[in-house]
Image 1: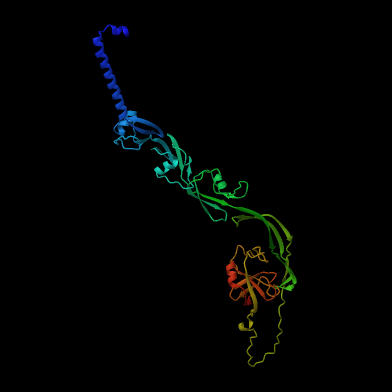
Image 2 (image 1 turned 60 degrees about the vertical axis):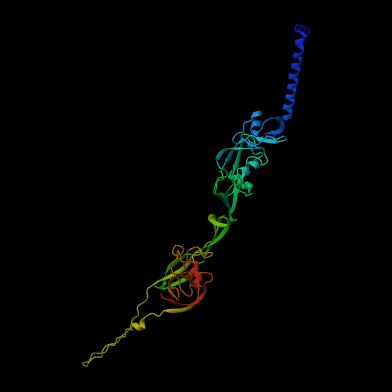
Length: 419
């Protein structure tokens, strides 16, 4: 440097040095003034604060200065034409894309919210306590997040005799739903389910459980005795005489009873045994021909005088008509399905398949079996049945239904033995 200065005369060096000094002082002054006129702002970029000194006049100028472009869905705390002031705090949040799936519909939404709960509130999405949400409500929103919402729907569960229950669910398998609701169902039991456990739960589905119970009971049935008729040559033809009274037998059946929700759904005989055999009733039937009645007549000698007119000794129709037997009896009513009844009468009449047949139970010593009778308030019937309690002047009338039998009740009636 010294050698370089030696090349110039001293008269020229002094002005040059002065000029340099002035320029340096001016530059320093400008720098000082430039720094002194800058303002200081705090810029929060997505939550990260940085302090910036700037000569920008507006927020827009500041953003351009620091190279930030505000997108359509981004959030800026101030309008872009807001004037910059010293100490200002400006917040900028970049929008994040959230993929929302709800009720099978997918939509991508831009948001600047911080948490899932804030996002739901922003989008006016209200959830019930039964709805499913893929993330916790306080979870942070991240760019590209997949948010799944499953809205609950109603179903009905009918469990046996219990009152139907309305439930809110978001789906899943039938088995999982029953376990969640503490509803027992054993696949190995006799209980029935109208859907499969592996089926998916659907909106407005009815899940019906039928509770099945089985038990074995004993039923005692009467075995009707048969009436055997034997010819008796010592008995006048047309007459009958009971030689031996019939006795009913007993048939014990083991029956499997199936109940569904407490009501009988099926009955099945699995075993039966004759506890007492029926004893046939023996009736003698007369075959002896009635001997003709011979009337002796006398004749007188003919005389020339006029003979007397012959007297007609035949009885008149009014005196020869057969009088009817009339009884007054205590009457009751029964049906083919009464307790202990087999559906057959003691004489073998099938009243189960012939519910409207007029049949009465009688004491054979009072009204012979097979007789045709007329009963007051009942009509003409066949004396075709007996009963343990039908003794003496008692008569039991067969009716087609229990309602008819109850309507008749018990009463004293007039009975005519027609034949």
